[in-house]
Amino acid sequence: MVVVENYNKTPPPNDGNRGAKGGWLSRIPTAYWVVGFIMLCMPLVVTPFILFQIFGWALILGMIALSLMFLGGLGGMVSLAQMTIAVCAGYMVAIFGDSAITSISLGLPWWLAVPIAIIVGTIFGTLTGAIAVRTEGIYTIMITLAIAAAFFYFTRQNYVIFNGFSGFNGVMPPVIFGIDWHNPTPFYYLVLFIATLAYLLVLYVSRSPFGLALQGVRDNSRRMAALGFNVTAHRIAAYTFASVIASVAGILLVWQNSQISPGTAGIGAAIDILIIAVVGGMRHPIGPFIGALIYVILRTFALDILVSFGMAGERFQLLIGIGFLIIVLWSSDGVLGIWRSWRERSSNINKLTGEKMDGQS
Amino acid sequence: MKTSVAQRLSAAGTANALELRGITKMFGALAALKDVTMTVQPGERRAVLGSNGAGKTTLFNCITGDFLPTSGTVRLFGEDVTEFPAFERIRRGLRRTYQISLLFSNLSVVDNIYLACRGVSRARFSLIRPGVDDALMATAEALTEAVHLHEFMNSPVAVLSYGQQRQLEIALALAGAPRFILFDEPAAGLSPTERSELVEILLNLPEHIGYIIIEHDMDVALRVSQSVTMMHNGQIFKEGTPQEIESDPEVQELYLGGGNE
Ligand SMILES: Nc1ncnc2c1ncn2[C@@H]1O[C@H](COP(=O)(O)OP(=O)(O)OP(=O)(O)O)[C@@H](O)[C@H]1O
Ligand SMILES: [Mg+2]
Image 1 (tube, rainbow over the protein chains, first blue to last red):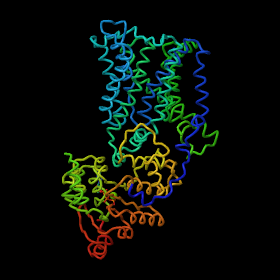
Image 2: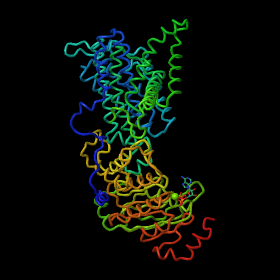
Image 3: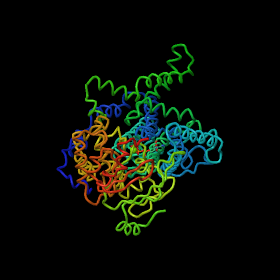
């Protein structure tokens, strides 16, 4: 401060980065209105199956991938444990709340079971972070994968708490305001609302001191320490933040399937989250949702497509793999990267100043 | 390990800004620093000179805690910080610049400086975006102007020229309320105009801020410092006023006559 006072001149004019005060409504980009309108009208157009199985599932997986985007895109830490953290919270609603396994489930009301599940998931995620942040790059991937594998085998073998191989079924969302939230339309709106909140939260936090510091840690952790930041603490806090999002998504995932078992958090599922985030793009929180929608559509329809071409249906993984390869080869930042370079080419945006995506401003 | 606030306050009043005792730094079998002892008073401005590989940057790294010294103690404003991580030393008023710029290449210029301001203030973990009238952001903007980068305020660091990146490097070290700054060859690669701007900035620093500047350009080094330390092969080889050092025959031989062995 002292130094600055020496040079104190009039503060420079505000050039829109943090915007003028009034009229926040008019600052919402058109794309948001369009996408928002389409999403809200979806139940009028599509079948309950598509609403529940395609959009519901895509939004939930998108949230889990969003927690990875927060760690990876903003913090430069690639965690393969995000699905595991989500499933951990999912198990907790089954254990503390209601399920068909009445010998284990404690049957607490949802307003107790849900916060407990989020807290346990977040603690688990924070501990994962505390272990993982001491490593860099490929070692972070390996250690989080090891945690995911350990959780998978532990839940499969533990019958006292996790009910082993079969897990829990009959885990239903609660009936609140007389609405059965397991019905496709209410469930869709519930998931849409929470996913939108998570998306906006990540977008907002990315420009907060914490989010900026996280990007600083990603770009140059040594310099961050030389500016007074406790880099390790920041990295762990990022895991905590991401775990809250993953935990909420994990609870929705259990409610959607109305069951949870070790297979939900298998190694394949852990890697699928990474694929979703990479395919969608890690540089903006919309990326994971795009990736999740592509993934869910492929997962659901690849089988039919393959069979109609006279190929074995179980090769749908192959189709996903090929799609993944094409997108990664084509662009350094998934679908978002392709979109961005297309837009830059077509509208001649100044590469220097137009760097930020819309909505980020 | 930690000292109490009271101890720190009482020490700060009387103590030297920096006290190094017997600092040795080994890289494998190579002794980059050999038993370096050095004292800098509060507000003192010192130049450190020496040929390539003399150990100047390593000395900075040991002072800031980027590396821990193999042996020896570091005292900052009277407090023993030898075992402290870098961020704890920075929070006590130490700052540095890097010989090879270490910036946040994907962030804008003002965000780089904002991070520097935030690092030594509270609420580093705040999830609330800085508002239009955020004091720290205003400070960051003023600092951007002080190093003549206001035109590039919202541009990513990648578009800055080499010289501008060096200016930004300096701005990061001026953020917050520095008490003691380590400048590692800040003038290297600057144009003559930028060089004189740098000298201007250094001479205009408030009196209570001391610094050490590593500088190969004798013109710059001697204009901005009151005392000079010559290093050679990881050891302190001469200390004195700029005039004494300039006229010292041994120094002249080292600088002019193949001191780089
Ligand atoms: N991280 C490191 N690992 C191994 N050796 C190192 C490391 N850093 C410095 N050294 C060695 O220590 C010696 C001193 O290096 P240092 O960078 O401190 O020199 P300097 O005085 O700053 O030189 P210059 O004027 O070139 O910047 C050199 O021989 C260098 O090779
Ligand atoms: Mg050096």
